[in-house]
Image (cartoon, rainbow, N blue to C red; front, side, top):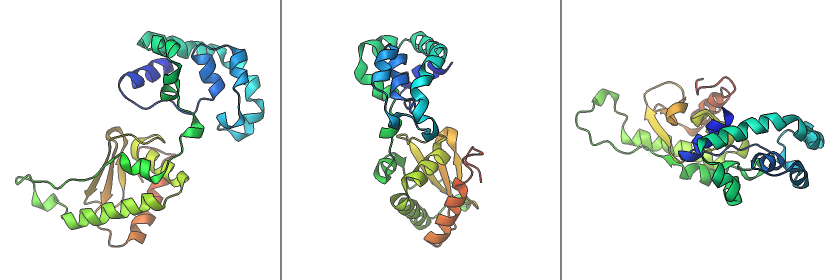
Length: 216
């Protein structure tokens, strides 16, 4: 099942599967255990407590790797994986290379556009000046955020820690920030009059990522 999910994500332009250590990727894509051991580095294991013993674990996950490889083959992308080592970083990006920065996140955002629909209910329409103010607060928040906060924001927004190319923002009449992760949409309240209150509410919203689904 995991192999199917990775393969179909690649085929449909989805994100890669980050977090696998390079030795596991080496074995998964057809390399030998000996070759995998030769590329082992401490930075490839995100769990600091297990970096010292990761080399001893490879033989214990052979069956799981075999099953993932089977799923990849059944999706039809195995010829690409076996013949094109240059695509491995696209399908299995290394955790150490997935460093979020403000610009990479901002570039993936689709910002609100003015609506010209005359039939739209004016009672539900947020004035353009409020949209500009709140989206400006969001941009400032992103530009000043630490990498850890950026990861939390991305996970709150889309459900995982890597930004996509179609992250939508909508300014609405509501009380707190809400994310519709399936639609990659962040809905921000229009009532903010200061950056401080916006920042406080958004930081509070980010504490919900462990419970999930973008709800405070």
